[in-house]
Amino acid sequence: MPPADPPADSAAASCGEPLPRVSAERTVSQSASPFAVRVSAPAKVNLYLEVGPVRRDGYHELVTVFQAVGLHDEVVASHAPSLRLAVHAMPAPGEPSGPGAPAGPSGVGVPGVPSDSRNLAWRAAELLAARHGIAPRVRLDLYKAIPVAGGMAGGSADAAAALLACATLWATGTSRDELAKMAGQLGSDVAFPLLGGTALGTGRGEVLAPALCTGRFHWVFALADFGISAGDAYRELDRLRATGRPARACAPDAVLDALRSGDPRRLAAAMKESNDLQPAALSLAPSLRRVLAAGRDLGALVGIVSGSGATCAFLAADEESAEQLAAALTTEGVCRAARVAAGPVPGARVLAPRGGRAPIG
Ligand code: ATP
Image 1 (spheres, rainbow, N blue to C red):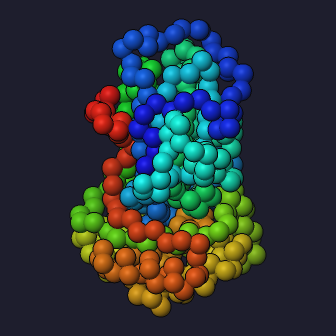
Image 2 (image 1 turned 120 degrees about the vertical axis):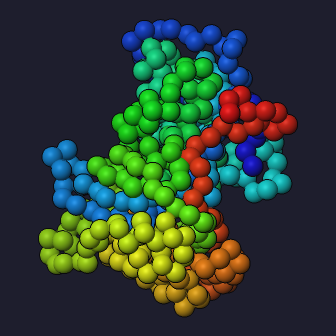
């Protein structure tokens, strides 16, 4: 787990940039706010993803069903003279981390994840600070378990976590509704990891309505050793649609009914051809066909590309089957790693620091 104690600044891990200018320089009193806040935010899987026409703003109109799953990134926000950000791989259980820990994987960043203003979590801190007319004086430590460019909204989860962590650290009193609005401004997928659970998403995916889901679904995620950029997947879909007719999802009703029933077999049947981005992801990365076929052969109820890929998501009948499937996928060597995660799980939440109580419930 990431460090529960406040992280120390380390030249190796931090990447400070000049303090962004804000309209009014107001400093929130730090006496009432905690020294460090740790927030976790979940990954998502799209159980249904219908991609509509391109809108005037360049985004596609979406109808999607999100489910938050038990694979989390964590963000630790602590007071600092200016905005700084460091990215770490989530340490394995028992691995030493935090101040004074020897240099290792958790101190050297994560390939493909920027530690400057290109990081969505950085932008989240800036946006929240600007909204409250304060300077973004914070250090953000990101601990990543969600695969990068894996179609599981890892960057969006970090942004959602950063919004909540900074709001708590700075004691801004920002409501969840206001955070959700800011999330929608940061990116199409940022609002969902704040909310969590299961939800119907429309617009760019940022207009959310909670969906009823009974029971727990057991997923296996086959992680790839490459990523697919969501932009590339949408462009490929537009190209495929201009030249052919990839199957098109037509309504989320069957998926929503299955979620209400809590029956994984029903959900599996409803999820066949439920992701419009899958043909695009398979066109960009044909090797994913082998992963999907292996999952099905090894007993998954259904296998899909998660969002824009490159992760493949498999639904299992129960927890034990999920564990067996993950082990078999790993043994087959068709993916970099396989992770078991159940859903739905709650959205971003403040965690207690190690040996202490969460600053806010
Ligand atoms: P989505 O499912 O929302 O389309 P994704 O899970 O496929 O996204 P991300 O892991 O969010 O993809 O990363 C996409 C790109 O975003 C990365 O390649 C990286 O350049 C950039 N990025 C910015 N901030 C982050 C972050 N905090 N974590 C990961 N990537 C980030």
